[in-house]
Image (cartoon, rainbow, N blue to C red; front, side, top):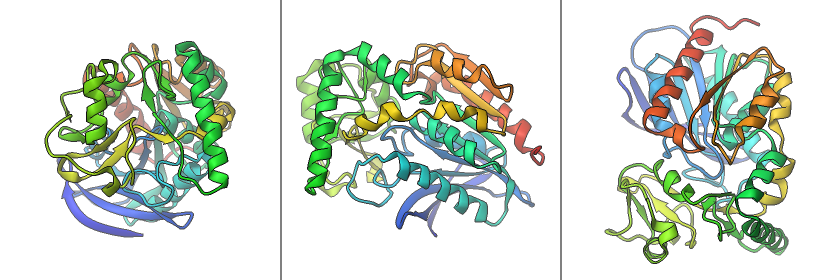
Length: 368
């Protein structure tokens, strides 16, 4: 376990770069710690979704939680972002669940944390992980899952309706990736978001533009990625003004991603973060088998599901149906698609609801 430089956080809190070990690999994290008051404090452990990293708007949520006087731990999964591990951009469901377990163990060991008032917060694919982890960890006091991936078959059906052709391309890439891994080849990378002709995990005409809104201001595209966005209107149309397509170039081989990809390599402002719109394609073969929504009945902690009714990546109707039979699960509905909940008015509504929900469970020792 380790700590590095202190950075400014929200009013009344500081943010530090820390790390913890998971499976012999160091996972990078932000730790928000209140500067005032004494006594054991609640802890909120947070992680992102499919191929995403902390800098993609998780700080906006974490700052609201830290402003309540809670300790907040926001981590990157191994193989992604500032975390270590090779090959880069690999997403292994079992490894990511182990990263959650290691993050909880690390967080509970921190001085000033009340281990009986620990909440898990996950979004998108991480929302599904939060449900799975809470179903096995009965010491968790509260759960927030935002636009959670709950049912692989439902998401696959929704994805197939978006573009059957690109689903077949994605499966072909996944098979090539698995075969190549047997011979030690680098992962075959597939885009996380894309348009109809891409072998992407999430496809819609606006997916790239909507996902780009999560990037911090001053994020830069690699020269190759910027060139694709400039030449192909379907890729570059509607990109957030927070993303720079020109200016200071950088070499993707010098980033944590370690290589270039036509699908997108990004460097954060001041070189503070590296990410890519790409993960190892092999996940497509395992994704339909992952059904964390089935674990909701095993969760004993109060649970809040924030779902967007137009979500095609994590179908809201399936999530609500799985939750309907459980009294301890609250479902809040929002008008919007998968990425809308991270920004603007919908973000304000959702984070306000989440703070209210967590405050009711974390300001006093949790009921067992």
